[in-house]
Image 1 (cartoon, rainbow, N blue to C red):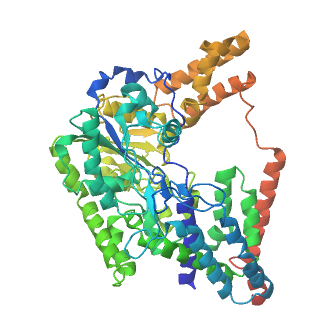
Image 2: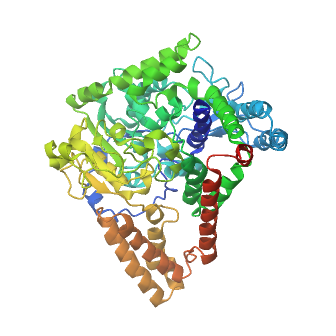
Image 3: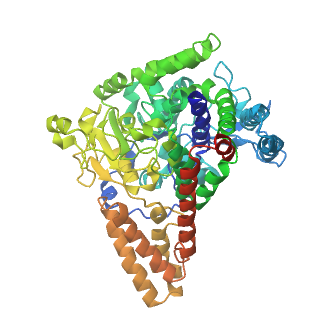
Length: 622
């Protein structure tokens, strides 16, 4: 039974992982006339020509893949939409019909309370059909003709739609404003493919960038999943003389326990978590209310417990067989110390020899990464790391990952463990301190203020920065982007270079404030200094000016974080809402609050009464 439960629950994690399409960075459209004087430290950057072109190795949702026909042209579904996407390729014109076809099987199971074999088979086939566009074979190759959009030119040459998409994904507007869009390149790679092949292609891409720009060297920025491509590239004998700096931002350099738990099927299986806490927690994060989650909990008990797990197991098995286990890139997301056991479990069966050779090759690159980076550093390459810490997998916007067992032991940005993103930081589980004995023998200069992290064990402790309670979506924190610009602009050489960028910092979310198409600060500038000024009264503009000044002071000081930063943002929003520019901020009604509380009480009663059982299970056991 326990094995079946593990398999079933894994579906939830799988679907969560694959349906997490929120980009790693979230920005907005770039505008030529933006004013980045709101970041005073960047004004000290010298000549634009002194900055090398920068190649971005992007995150999981930043490379657009599409289904192509025999001529290489995008295939369209019956609604005329291209079958493309950054993460999942799903035919929206048929998915509803596929899911509705399950209804007779569900009703048969519910009404007759018989074997779920028919329903399980139907679920397996449905998931396979829905995910079939990106199906992988036992050699680690896509079954269908998948192509990835490739940009052999800088951001400055992208068309308007692509350019706006780029800045929504990766908000490098400050860099573009300071150094020029012609110095930003995006090296895309397939999610459904071999990271070693992508790394081999990076050699030619660097040559192309150097030829186009006339530069002798390039900078590399790896973001999240891009860390796997960097790891692979560093093991392909790169010409270190052509690399100036490497900046890793929340980068996956030694996998994530999420993927290890997922593939090894290690989950939190307690009745309380599964039947009470899990779904309401997800709904609370996504909608602001847990009410619907409590209702779902109550409805789930309509299915017998075993039937529910059988269905989940079938869906998970289909997803695993269709995509995950045959994709080298997913294997590249494993921590190095988890690889051998899982390769034994899934790949060393004689049927996956070609795929195994690919995953073994990447494993070698990952094991060699530290030595390769040290060699690069000795050759004069600057290497910098930025990471978030202080969160479990239950925290943040992807809190459905809290179902994995390691959520109780990890210290992460809610996606990537801090030791992976920093090449070796020592950390206590999120919310805990390092042991007293450890702290007494450690160098206090490298211990985080909350005493949960020791930076001295990083591969590069002098060039690694930490943001406390920083979620993986680091693009929402202007300080992270500014730090990267300061590094690339030559202002920051290490953690001692600028006092405003100490090794340990706190997080803040300034996305709504500084995004370029509708950010509050740019809207305020239009009201105060632009043509719109005449439309508002002196009293309204005075209130906006006061709030605007407060926001500028907050932005100028990266140490202002968390609730303090949000308070300044809220004051500016309210001032403009009072002037009719924005709608007043909505507050949760008393009715909604009471309803949520009532549904929680009902949910708690059902947990007390039925435990981890369906209604029919309870009746049979009486």
